View 1 (cartoon, one colour):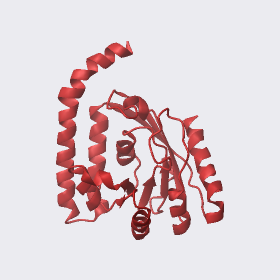
View 2 (cartoon, one colour):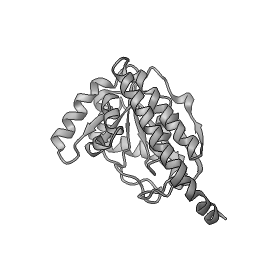
View 3 (spheres, rainbow, N blue to C red):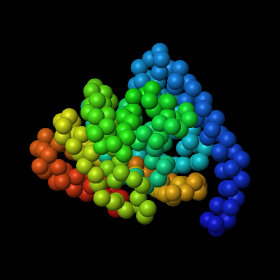
Length: 241
């Protein structure tokens, strides 16, 4: 039955969803750019939320969110989320409910509309081929993570092929320790069934986002960063189970 439904979904995906996605991105991106010149990036980011929610409606995608009570909107966080699919991005944008910056690779800056919008919103663009430049970009971005503005990391560094957590990288945890701000673990489930990794085989589905209790980093330092990584990985992994 699911194979039949996938076949029936293809005309919608190519002839309705794809054109509407282009329109959604172009319109929201254009308005965001205009707003970014007259209001704060935090206010302009409302268009990113609208963009993401329109994507969820068009797919369609049903999302269950739990743990909102764990968020203090006046507190800045290092948000650490697992990464299963391209669909994780609209899920976080549309439903997390926090003003945040992305840490994104330089190549994404070249994407029409999306690249310039990310730059105007103040996202952290790094050159992963140049370690010194990447570190400098992240250090310069630390001043932005204040007054309830947070930063999102995918600690795995890439999308998981099978949905299971892969090895975490240190960047997010070093950032949190340096700034002395808590880590907010987030578990995302179901998005890999909506868009599997390394494909564009979109299909409607259900997803879930679990916002866990923040992890205090005050008791950690560079020498114990691996303990912090394992603690956060365990919390996110528990959500997957």
